[in-house]
Image (cartoon, rainbow, N blue to C red; front, side, top):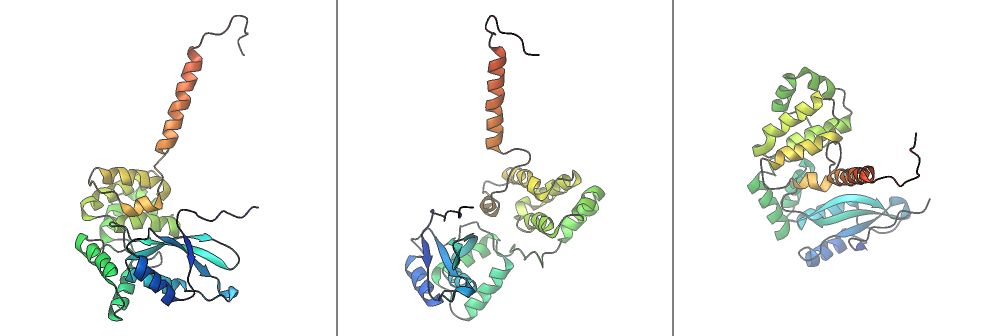
Length: 256
């Protein structure tokens, strides 16, 4: 099998230490669109900033880590970019900010990202890890009122369950009630979390003009068919209708 091509949307850079990565972000945090950070595998013996070190440095400068990618036998990649204005915070990173603040390591861009999250409520809605995320009381009450939804929810895997609860925890106050209602209705139909996202996004769109940045970064598919799939279906249907309307040429036999 041919190796997967390396991503080309952002530069691929390696840093031998946390200090060199710190120096890079001190210069480039406000102008760079992001990078794919090369992290050396432990077995390689190559000097490299570690994943934990890289995350701490990034948070100090208002950046955040993202999806990883394979690179080669010695390195793997981690996407690092400036934090988007509406991106959600994890409780892990909220706790890291407290540590970095106590150590005096936070820089202006990182402080600004924290203050923005505190001012619009994202800080308070920071989500827990899959291991620690609990069912909120209001969502538990909503499930209790729908036995079918509750029964299906209880059969979900940890990953699927987390996917549902993540949507509840990250909802802003203006859309939380409607989001929970949509989730419960979908669970009652035995729809999986993969199917739920389309309805969730449609419900939220009716409540707020701002897109849910986290849902957008995760690129959740819509229930049933995506817009592109529906468009292709419409094109195929039109083609079938066109062929059906065309007169058959004389002499051609009708197919059985």
